[in-house]
Length: 185
Image (cartoon, rainbow, N blue to C red; front, side, top):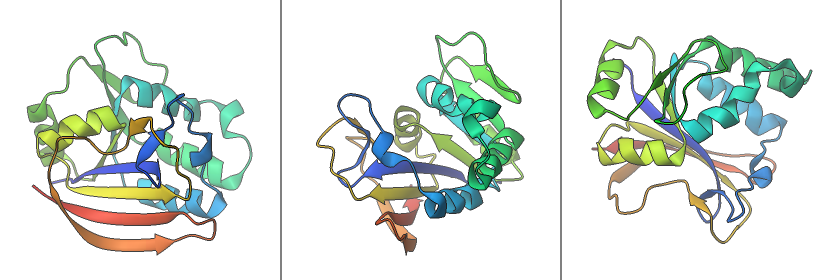
């Protein structure tokens, strides 16, 4: 049985993007990117909402990937996993190994988890909020960046109360702190 793991790169005040929708401050440096690659490597399935999928789909294009070894590695890891996009508006996908589900159904996620031979990732705060509310998230990886953006899109859902247990932490040279938690459902 696979675990459902939520990862987010956030500002210190808990946002994945600022009030203008910008997240340029969140671009990981080589050290953080290599760490993220290693975290993502075991995932067999990525679950996304439409916006997060559209953000991530650029990893399918060579012009975005470039020739930096850490970027090439991430693209290979990302392309190797299956993707499920939850969207009522998206009619067609632009990436391989991808399917669309029109609505978020907790039972579908439970089924994916129970039949998975690997862990699953869930990306995007709106989709993750639905999974938190349904008690489906098993672990969280939060990358706290040394920036305060003052508002925007929150990384963690409001009006959800859950206990977390710290499993691991790591500090990076650029000031980013990684926190790894298990979630008590």
